[in-house]
Image (cartoon, rainbow, N blue to C red; front, side):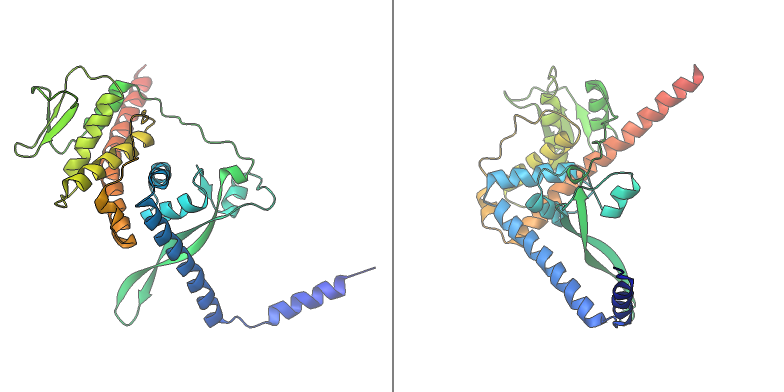
Length: 292
């Protein structure tokens, strides 16, 4: 039996159906609002739930280039995700996508010119992503293998404040940024990862604006330290998020996201300097190899 006539007829009917721009716009707006609502809901959850707060931090550390909103969305939908791409991008990379995959929805920024105002506005469109766990692709290997000395050099590269080891610090304090003389003091003799944990907390303080709430400010720098250490494979087993600040619990979702944005920003300031240092190291090693 031949079904070509039915298939051809159905295809022709579909091609003749007019594209309804208004309906398409309403559908996209509904999808967009659904994701905004999920991000807000997740922000409200992390402000009172230590487990979900740490879950968000782990997601943001893995996807550090993603916005707070998208990190919240990934954390809510697939907290164990490690590498995401669109379906077509996985196929182009030669990966086979499993049957009935679970998609992660995020918001992709796109620019649009507003004729009335004459300005370029940023809109966000829903985008469906797939984690590597939904494919047969092999996880990417971490090609970076820096020793502790290289990591310390990267942390201190183009440091925004002077660094000194010439000060006796109180017991239990590994590093301390003195705002008055703008010097970051580091305890001598610290071993990794303690030196990285202590140093990154103080470096985060340098990049964060004070809110007037010392508990919250200390917590933000602590979180930024966790993110940068987690990002670079430094042991973070000593970090504890069981006791969230009271001020965090009273925040609206927009305030929570703003705070998380501050934390991410402080982490990215450190990460940018570190990556520049790593690139410089790689270039120097390459030049030395050529000289041989």
